[in-house]
Length: 276
Image (tube, rainbow, N blue to C red):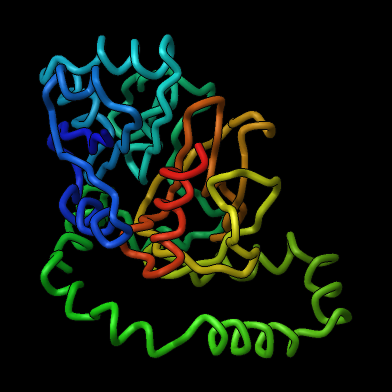
């Protein structure tokens, strides 16, 4: 049984609907008994880091989660805040996390004053904003309509567009990447909301069949920092590079929302179910 852990912080039904689309049976539960019997866990999260840790403790979930993840090595997928809670500590709330993965969670920081656009915007308000797109509204983009873009047509579109960036231009960007990102940061605001690509650093079963140029949907003001390189599967650039997919042993995490990322997001969930 797949259990989507309910600790009061997440767009749980969006994930459940996506799993139903790929014929996976799952339940949303905060019951210790259900978590104990789970074959795999999905750990979503929308909201404030400090409130998330508070809820986990108040729901009485900390002991069973530690047992399942650290002792029994049950595969777990953390999504957005869910992944961040794997960390040791966060600036958001100045509180300790679950401590499963060495590293901390920090707010985006740019050397210029681009944050002047967002000093009053918290992670919580960002997550509230994405919730405005309810499951029902999102479902308006039905599978049939989305399927109009077949795999062959999408691949051709992707390859053709990518080829427009010649090796010389890509090399120019690569050589001058720090300066390019610094200039870009002047126009960035916090939170980071919208579609962005991933840069795959190493292979993982979680990203089987997913290309380097694939886009996913992000909405966050904080990200993992001081994470050991061996745990970083992919990064994303927003002013600078930050970890967007991570893995340590049986623990997997995405900073983006697969359930908001159309067919490629479904692939993340499918890979987690089939290959981890």
